[in-house]
Image 1 (cartoon, helix red, strand yellow):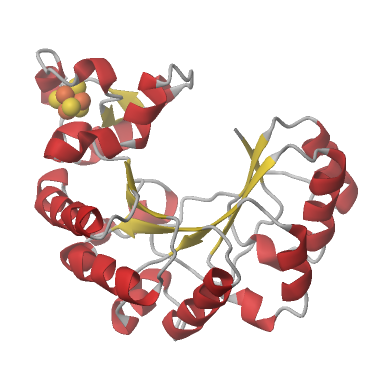
Image 2 (tube, protein in one colour; image 1 turned 90 degrees about the horizontal axis):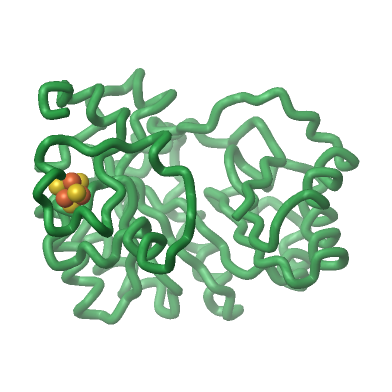
Amino acid sequence: MSILVVEEICNQECVFCSAYWRKIDFSFKNIIRQIIGKWDLIQISWWEPLLNKDIFKIIAFIKKYKPKTFIEFQSNWILISKNKNYNKLLKLWVDIFNINYPSHIDSITDVIVWTKNTKEIRDLWIKKLLISWWKVRLTIIITSFNLEYLKETVEYIHNNFIWIERIQFSFIKIMRLALENLKIIPSYENVSAHLIEALEICKKYNLKADVDHIPMCYLNEYANLHVDYKKIISNMSWDYKAEKKKIKKCLNCEKGKYCSWFRIDYINLFWLENEL
Ligand code: SF4
C-alpha cells in the first residue's frame, strides 16, 4: 500500500489531526511522477485531497496508466458539496471512499473538527454516494468527545446509511495536534467497554467493522477485528515496530502471537515506562 499526498491544507481543523507538512512539490507533474513509482494499492490521503484543483485529473491518470491499481480516496467529504466535478468523480470510479465520521451529534462533530455545521452536509453527501452504489467506509477516530456515544453512532449509521461497506474505529494517534489537546485522549481502559458495545451493535446489524491503534487485549472477543491481526494472519509484512512496543503484560499473553502491542506514543503519554 502506498500513500499519495496531494495537498497540505485542509478545510477543517480536527483536534486530532496527525498530518504534518512535508516538503513536497504538489504540481501535477510531480504528483504524476510519484504515482508512476507507486504500487497497486494507492491511498489518496492526508489533509483534504478535494482541495487539489487537479484531483480529478490525478485519479483519471491512475485509472488510465495503472488500471489495476486499487484506489482508496480519503476525505472529510465536505467540499464535495461545492465541487462542480462531483459527477466526473463518479464516472472515474475509485474503489472505496474512506470518510472521516466524527460523530452523529452536531455539537460533538463541531468540537472535534473545530469547524461549524459540517455534520448535515457530510451526512447528505455520504447518502448521495451510497445511493449511487459507491463503496464507503466510515472512519470514527475515538476521542474523549465521542467515546460515550459510539454505540449510538453505530445505531445512527445503521439507520441512516444503509449499504455502508464498513466502519473503522481508530483510537486517536497521540501526535501533532493531539499533543496540544491532551484532554481529548482517553485511556484504553475507558475506551474498551464503549468500543465493545459499539462492536456488538455492528455484529447485531451485520455491519463489517475494523479496529485500529488500540491493543487487542482491550477488545475481548472482538480482537480478530483488529486490522493488525488481519495483517499478521495474512503474513503481510509491515514495519509496525517503529510505532509499537511490547510491555510486561504482553510477555505471557495468549494473543501475543497475533498482536502488534502498544503504541509508543501511548506508552509515553500514560507513563507506562515502568511496564516495559
Ligand atoms: S500482546 Fe500485549 S498488547 Fe497484545 S493483546 Fe497481549 S497484552 Fe495486549
